[in-house]
Image (cartoon, rainbow, N blue to C red; front, side):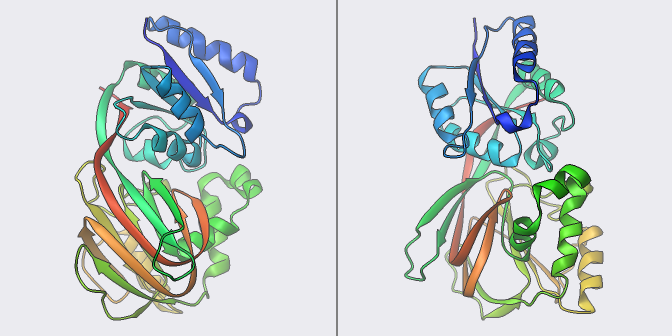
Amino acid sequence: MKRAAVVVNPTKIKKMPEFRRHVEQVMRSYGWAAPLWLETTADDPGFGQTRTAVDQGVDMVAALGGDGTVRNVASGLLDTGVPLGILPAGTGNLLARNLGLPVRNHFTGLRAAMAGRDRAIDALCVQIDTTGDGEPDEQAICTVMTGCGLDAEIMASTSDKLKDRASWLAYPIAGLKHINAGRTPMRIAYDDGDLQPIRPLTTVLVGNCGQLTGGVKLMPDASPDDGALDVVELSAKGATWARLVSQVLRAARKETKQVRRRTAHSVRIECAEPTRVEIDGEVHDHALNVQIAVKPKSLLVRVPR
């Protein structure tokens, strides 16, 4: 019999024994054995548990949690040939949304994973230099999107309490507090090109997928398996915010002073001052240099047939 592992964030489930029994029943109904059950911890939010599951020869690893749990499980599955199943339990559930997976119910997501097919998608390798010496001291895998600037500030200031009350609307609500935030001087290089002239930017977003919560297509041409990065440079101040928001909501492709779009296989960002970076919603403080490269089709994900 095939066997899966379930890597679960225990803070997302109120009645764990009952939930676990239900998961086992669903898996048995598809002819699979009872799963290997592994809970995340504050010290290890999913990577170590996933490696344990892979070492035990499971046929799939299902991540039950938010975008952070999914990202950590995905990090442990890169280039292993073991597929990722997504049981959404977060605020954004962005990878599931971008792949057309269920986002509102754990068991609907579980059934989609059990009956689905494997799809190979890209991942992003993000390296962060917080000291300015040019050597990365933090490294992470990204499945959806990473951003340098305002979006990371919004993530950092959005409380769990607000997310519980307002769901994905918590992010635009928190964003209102930053409407008058200043811009950060940045220089960007694409692929092997030279750094562009310094430019004050609100944020730079690099995506593997392009859709945000609420159906907003920030990167309308992004595809998770095209081997490329989609990049959006955003710059707004004062009255120009209205034009920026309008262009983003319309998914307009025309380049303006507020919105510039690029595609590349690698991106290097240099910040003139320490700047926050978010990776699939997880915030890293005080980056001076950020490098992002694509790892083509390095992750298998269970998607609907």
